[in-house]
Length: 295
Image 1 (cartoon, helix red, strand yellow):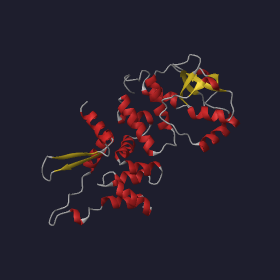
Image 2: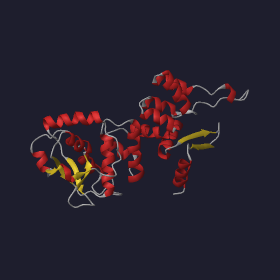
Image 3: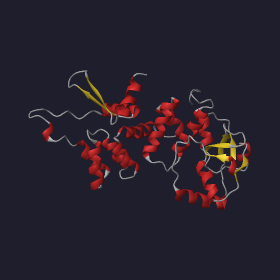
């Protein structure tokens, strides 16, 4: 499915087959065919580069209760610990490992794989994306990491992850929003639908404050974002800019997602010329923009 490059020695589809191991096996021979074994829980440690740091305690307790009753149905994916030959490092399944400790298990089922550091990080990102409890910002950040660090395209990710390309593109566009709006999204004060409606506005942070304070719906937010600017910002007799066509809006979204900053494309009326503006919200973002433009 994907070229074998940049840490993809097994191919993205092969990595996906290791990550997608939460469904119950269809028969008792499935685990044997995958060379499952059991290891003491104390010889297993989390991946120190695991991109996910927070694990919901209530969810872990629920999983621990299930493990007490039924055991761990599907094994963890581990690799030999590069720093200690006597131990193993989790590649996928840290939630199960944590819940197993709460359930006071002494050993857990594992499948040992010879992953290198790059593949471990890639699998960790894929596993996080596949889990249902990510917020939209975490999901978008995962897509961006897979694209920027491992050279995948949106089309490749869509096919491998079973999602539409438009879903991946729309999620990544959220990362172009100001930090204040992203905070609202991470705290579940606005939805991804609200955030997408704000992307093309001139001042998404101010509009987001209105949305939160008034509890506006997504449809109401869309209408608010499309309102023309205040009269005081326009000169008498000056005509308003025509509404942008869908292709231009989509282009702005793609550029914003790829750069991680808000990009605006303005065509000169009746001409083939225009302007592309990139908005940064910190000097760190400006440094990152300069780095990307000078590659």
